[in-house]
Length: 276
Image (cartoon, rainbow, N blue to C red):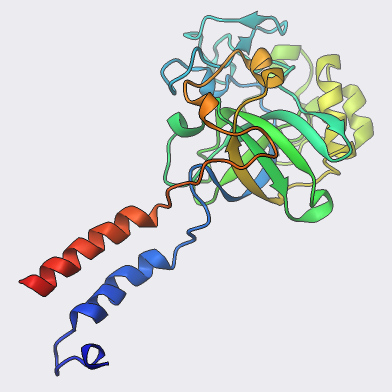
């Protein structure tokens, strides 16, 4: 108790510890690079995914892109279709339902305070925690990065007709009017509109209204897992660290929380303060 009563105009070491540590300890320690909470979204812009560039992460190769005819191409130096290049997203990187409560697919990813080398080609088990999809699970492989809103952990799921962008790459790839893909930040309005999409994209579009129940931004719990071959066979991309993680439904390795390093640093400061 004596230690908690500083002399006038003097901050005790213990109080100093509390003052220094409180902003850090008040942060959400449940979210880390391997597991945590986030939000799902929808997108489909037909651009070359961020993880299709070389040297984005430690992997065997980047994510495959396709040409305008949806034929895979492995020249990873090709520019993005959204910038006048010849590399488009592949239609087979669309979601599909395995059963009523489990789906597979691809996603953009952003995990706060990290860069794309953390998530490119990594797989995550998503458990939705709100909305009509609450309780459902999905395994996605990160084929893109979601840097546009860097304030929350985000998983924009690649859903044809689920959103569109100003770049008009989808109209270029499929030689159809941009209006076919709906409006920016929304996509198509109804399941029947999926019939107007190019045939390779229709199944993924219907998934949005059937399995995903037209959700826009449900919250979720995520955890890193080993990628299923079903996804890596499509993307062609396998991370060097992929085998270090459990499978879907298994317990992932315990993450090292970001407060650990800060706590050790503060502890060192306090010891020095006490001794000197």
